[in-house]
Length: 270
Length: 298
Image (cartoon, rainbow over all chains, first blue to last red; front, side, top):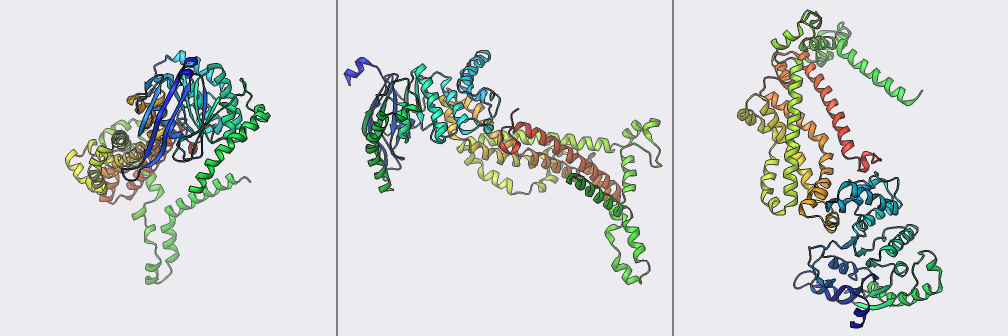
């Protein structure tokens, strides 16, 4: 651990992170003593069968959910539940775009809340709308947009705050394959420029391989750290052609095997 | 022929038939049964066509002109000879003042009812503690037919505008309150989290998420709120008033002047239609982000 710290700085540290649900007598463990570190600028994917507590871990890192045990440090400071840090951005799986706000006003919300002047705000919003390919939809209400466009709005709403740490909870889980690939390209492009530290929760192995530097496989409920895989593909990556390389297939089947055991455990229990 | 032509054709045809029956139905009925023996005559006479009960379009029209101070009882136009203003001052419950009073009180009842309903709904909707305290009181008060309160309201607030506004208020308040309460309780939790994560404090969360999200529910009940306000005002005027369309109706009942009653009903109908169209327009604009209101780009 110390050696790693010499070369790169740990931004997120989880120590024996534990979460149990339920009352005193009927405690259901969801996350069981998970310890891991995420380096600065690293793109880490958390993958596991549904119910393995991967979203729970993300919510605890964001400070949205209290933990039952263990510790979370962001840049050396312990995370306090309910006290949110501005350098952390969060993208939900669910469609969380505000239906009563136009695209512009959705993307600009964070700047608005932090008292950025209108003129300045408009310049920034225009840049992010351009980047997300939403030009021409500035004044559209979300109801008129497709699912993919709405998710781009939420992504830009988070990114406009320039978060150094990005927590993403299956952000593209509800999108069709084609739209998903487009979103991967967009995210890779942005990440190449800004090099945020990313923790990306998914159950889609292809997605995890396309995007991340490191894949952490969690066991079936209760979530334990099962195995860590490094993803050595060169960057910048192309979200589409990467999937056709033999290295991709090889690593895919290797992790698939590890993951498959957990999926089977889930279905055997359920 | 396009369908719309035939729709309009039948609408007009129906209206003409209705008016004709209204105007001459009683005469035709009497003429048809005139040859029969008295027992049959009595049995086949349609009482409800009697002008005593339903008046006649021509009579209603002439009473409309008189109540509106447009003509005098002998049918001379008052606009041209300058008697209009004199008539307005002589008849305090003329059609103009009555309509204006009813509209004014409807507007205030609506405004006060919606305002207080939203405020209380938001507060109780966001505070489980306060909601638990007030719940039995609200349930009890709401179970009371509000109309039963009107005599008490008139007793306390008098025959003036205040009692009408109060009557409208007690009806409108609950409609708006329940919808707001439901809306405030069902604010999407992730919508709140998003704002928090973007740096919003409690106050900002309230104004950027909770209020706009709840207002969607409020705007949806604006149409019933407005018609309830009008109902409240009319009932208030029935129980005790000096001016108002409801006052014309209740007075016409006492004096057996059906034509006057019909005039007031006719004006009320127009008022109702105009108010409904107006509120629909406002609603369509306020809820332009929701699917059922078109949701197009603005």
